Every structure is written in structure tokens, then in C-alpha cells.
Image (cartoon, rainbow, N blue to C red; front, top):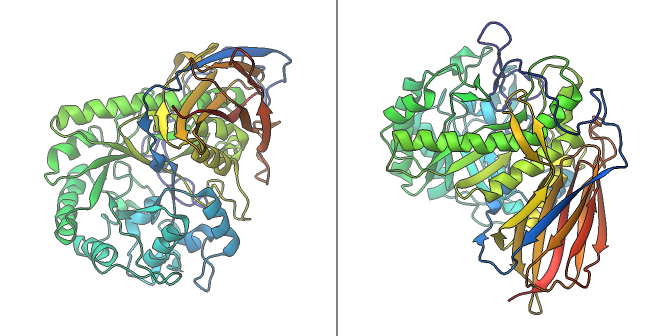
Length: 535
């Protein structure tokens, strides 16, 4: 992914309507128009409705669960522009931006940022912007990055420059972070050890404006072996990820190197520990003039395509490396409606993107072999930063924060019955015959006084109708309940201003039959917390 001033960081390499772009490296072409279920009129807005739809949730709150994976709450930090407004010209953190980062509390931070990694030299006091070739001071350097990780209590992940860097340079990087250990200028303590490393960024794509950063798969694999050997010689315990991709998504090619992953996996001989994917920039429509209705439903169904793509990648890994079980890391993802296609470009930071973001985080949290996930990106960065350059939270911030409140203790199973709609293929999103209008993620964590907290993220994807829900908890006796709700009046509001999503807090009544009722307005995300006995 590149800086929005240069949005087409992976430009056209095929003639016609197919377009490759660097926001996650998707290849796009025109697809059929979507006309799903109760979608509302095919115009710029969804007409409000007084109707509602019902859903029913059943949870065995005493059933065994699995530990939640909070590493899916990560983000990305670039080195350019002072870490996207995080660092001032004098080298110190911008207080308001740092305060917002602490509020968000990302659990993993990836550095130095997408395609910028391909020309970044970690020891250099000045580096080059990969697209403009502008020379900038490295204000967000490795020490400052690790100080940010220290400040927000995040695990660091570093993407090494495998294109214009050297294996020796990468080995010195490992030595500086993990052997010599840098000291924090803020606390005086040793800065975090860097366990996670990534071998380059999106090598399965071509960069039209910088052909010098393009590597054929065989050369990429050769360099991977060289780099891994040099880096593990310094610290044999580092956990190394390899960026890979499926060949197609929603029937469209997503790499100009057909068979990229098979070639790389069949060539690399050194051990690596996880696969890095950028398969969750959705819906990524390519056709100018696509209607808001199409793009909204594409976003609402996007997480299901991500889930399917995980399955394709698992099979690919099993075919080529049958003896190695490799977890998956989504090191970049974001709502992304379009690039260079008009007003819909701005919906990345609109409430519409919050529905996809909540749903894909649900998929990450429910997928056992997802190691970690990093939202693109932490701050500023045009429309992408969860923290606006003006130091206020965007919808992505609010969704990530709400999910962080929910991901505690054990993840438990929840059964939901709701209406479904048919969604046709659009952009990178595959057709879905029956997409539930309501999705749920449930967790349980011990609390004080012999109590436990049952937490449920509930997503109402219907853009026009409220969702009326009933919740049952089996033999568990619920005490009291409350709801934190993220909602908006205009799902396509592209104003990029404070309070794009309204957060409301309200108590919920637990009825005598131990059933709980809740109403979610259209296109909204809720966190429902229920106090229950701990055993």
C-alpha cells in the first residue's frame, strides 16, 4: 500500500478494464451489477424504512471456549511523513496523536509501511519516498517505532527491504533490535524484542512507476533464502512470514505472475513460519459509476470472500508443503470501495466501511489459524488512518476499539438465525446466495465477585431496516445487560469529520424468562455485555 498522494501504487499491467492497484494489490475488472434482497432504491442513498427484521441468538454461555486472539487488533505504521503525523519535526511524538494511539491500543504494529518497505534503509537518516522519490528525514526510525510499540503496548512486526536492500543489512537490523537491544529514550528501558519479521511487501505485484522494485518469483524466492539464512544466523528464534497470494479472487486475476505462490513455495528452501496475505481490501469495485447500492452490498459480503480465500490459500499451502502447517497473517486490510473511480473513493473513511471492518474482524477472530491482522493504517495517511490527521477517531478507530473491548477471555460459539439476502459478485467480492443480515461474535471472561461477562459483537448489515433481536443463554441466569452502539444517519457520509459514527450507551432489560431483547438501527454495530455467574 502506498501514500494516497500516489494512489495507484500498482498500476495497469494488462490492457482493457483490468486494473492493478497497490491498496492491498488487487487486480480489478468490471463485474455484474448487484441487486440483492431488500437493498432499497438504486440511487445515492438508501431510503429509510419503518420496517424491521427479526433475528434470534442462542448461546450456551457455559460451553468450553477457545482463548481470544487479540493479535487481530493490529495496525500499520509507515516511516514517511513522520510516521503519518505521529512524529513531529523535532523528533518527538505529537502528543495528541500519541494519546489517540494509546486509546486505540493496537496489539501489533507493522513497520515501515507497505511498498515503502521496498526502498527503505533502516540505518539511513534520510530515505526516499517510493513514488515521488522525495528525500525525507527518517523521523519515524526503528527506535522511534519501537518506542511507539512500547507506549501502546504493541508487539512489533518489521517488513525487511528484500528488493533494494541486502541480506547483511537485514541481519544488522535483527542484531540491533534483538541482540544489542535498543534503549527507550522515554522510559530508559530496553525496547521490545522483535519476534515477527516479514520478507518484503506484495512481491506478487508489479509497480509500473517503479519497475526497479519488481522481482520475478524465482528471484524473489532466491533472495528469501539468502535473507532468512542471514537473519536466523543472528537470532534463530525469529518468526518469519512470507507474502503470498492466491491466483484469483472472485474469478479475477490478482497477480501478473500466474502460479506465483506455487513457484515461490517450490523454490524457497529455508524455513519460514507463516503466510502473509493482503486479501481483505473490499469490495474494491473497478468500474466508474458503480452505484452505492452495489458497493455497499459488496462491502457487506466482503468478509465471506476473505473467508473463502483463506480456504483456497490453505489448500495451496497443503498441496505444495503438505508437512508444514502455516498460520495466516493479514498484514494489511481495509475497507476500500474504489480507487480513481469518483466519490466512492472516499467511502474508505465513511460509515459504510465500518460494516465491512466489523465483519472481517469477526472472521479474523473466529479463524483459528489467523496469527495476526494489521489494519491499514494507524494514523493520517489520506483516508486510511484510523486516527485522522486532526487527532480525532475515524469510524475504523471506533470499530477497532469496540472489537478490542469485546475480545477478552474465551471465544464461545453463538448460533444466530436471521433473514438472508442474495448478493451478486462485485469487484473483488464473490456472489453470495444467502448472506445473513445479522452476524455475531461472542466471548466470555471472568469478572469480579463471582461474575463473568458475556460479550457479543452484533452487526446489522441491513442498510434500511432496524434489526430486532432475541437472545437466549440456555441454563445461565443473566443478571443485567447493557449495549454500546455504533450507528450513523448516513452510511455514505464522506465528510471525514469527527463523530461520523455516534456511540450510544444504554441498559437492556433481562426479562423474567431470561430472554434479552435489543434493537439495532440500520447499518450498525453493537457490543452487548451481559453479566452472568462465572460458573
